Length: 176
Image (cartoon, rainbow, N blue to C red; front, side, top):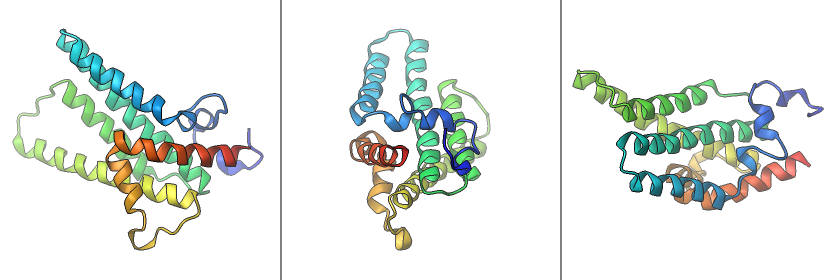
């Protein structure tokens, strides 16, 4: 697909760079509408199991969005995959699934520890995405200059309205 071999080190890169599909090609209103429909449907459904599945769908979508967009931005900035970022995306997904399944660990200290690491993971992922976006755009990232991007990724449903057009613009420019 690409003449430059630096783009071909991840198995899911074909999905992210497909010109007809991929999360980097979605419009902001597509993403927001999908999340909103799942959220409203989960509130209207009486069956608790189905409602929990819809909420889990939101969390799976957000985690995979972070993973694919993070790798896409890193590829555009010509950087290697940050495996700690990938681990934290999968941890977010695992934690969501454990919450939905009402997983009981029994020990409060373990639950608190997992919850604290969840908060750290979410902050870390939002910051890494903000840095990757600014690097892909060729902007400075020193002295925490990515504050606005960090807040948009941290407050994801609202921030998507501002971030996704920038991501789409980057990917369209680089793919052409």
